[in-house]
Image (cartoon, rainbow, N blue to C red; front, side, top):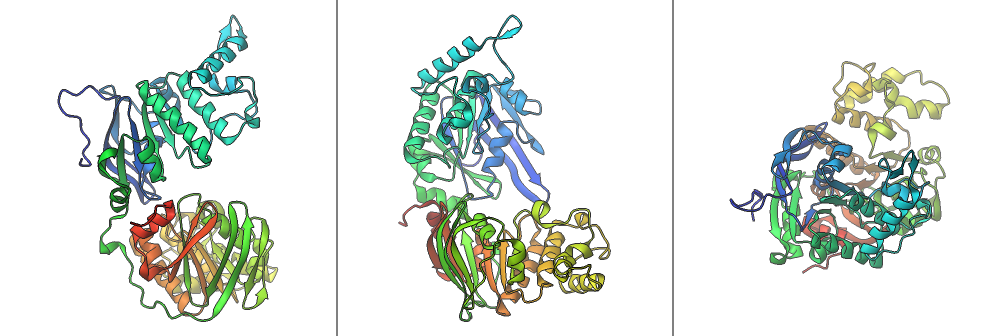
Length: 504
């Protein structure tokens, strides 16, 4: 089936149609002109790589995001701009990856939140508990209506979300990566409930990066790539290889050509049995002049590892050794003192000094290490701005008024100004920047490696990961499951490693 998923004349009116849906976040086009039909009693799976737009599309259906263009039709009628409340009123529910429940109250109270049953002026607790129990029994779920939600397991909290949607008589339910934190038995229970919902005529939109789930519960699969809908298939007609090829297919223009690759020095950094929040027993070596890429799905543990290495998060075990000397940091300040720098994924939240000048943002680390305000701050910032070609009205300009690419170059300049910096952890270094700035950043990274620095590159952009890296460490569920030479990897082979699908 083509990406144009329009119903044939004479078909029953589908419960939900999306027409021309587009959504951007700054310069990033999350969705572009998506047409899709959701049918009653089916499980429609949305698949794609990280950043393909699948969760954004699910959130638009649930009223959590507003499209910039396009329309949603419910039962053939165009909906006004949806909000979470109006989506509920129209029979649309969502079961989120980040469990959306109130932990301090009971299961029954969560199901009736904002719509409590009453008897006269009083809340009718007995009715709320009875209805909750009946709903749970209908789906063969053991759940005490009076239990406080914070005492429940992650799987039980997911059940609370599902029952809440059913209590509100949802006709369409979006499951957004809802199984990502569940074990095998819990996931099977979730799948059974979803099939039961579909059998009762509920339309299910299932967002997942686990392709096995598509074939276990899906009726159709819609493939998103770079924010565009590229195909819609009946699941019985395809294989996992079909989906992977459509998810990653790209032309050569997406790739960057390194001027230098492969000439690396001796082992410089040893990450020895690192464990901590979201990370288990990572043991790797990185050479001077090497760019070691880290790939994996969202939640695989890549950013969590970066936080451990930079001393942001507390490790439970492990050592970091640089050129034979242990440098394991307990804080970012210690990491910087020992030559480790980190470009964070969320530059607005954890990178930039918002409301401060370009000059202050570039020199802040050197100023703090000197123990006083750096006298040559403006001179340093002017020199670094020229070196990195940062487009601004001058170093006194508020950094938040710069483009995303220039903001990212300001943060790179901050770390390049640090004396004795030799290890650079770059977490999604080109996220939200335009193609021109992207290639400038690539050249800077390449130059650092050519000067013998050790580069740890975390990226969800597969062409970026393959183009820049010498080797790629694949993470899954907090562990490094494979390390492959970038020259021998392809997008398809990496995606198979990310999701744990055996190569054909």
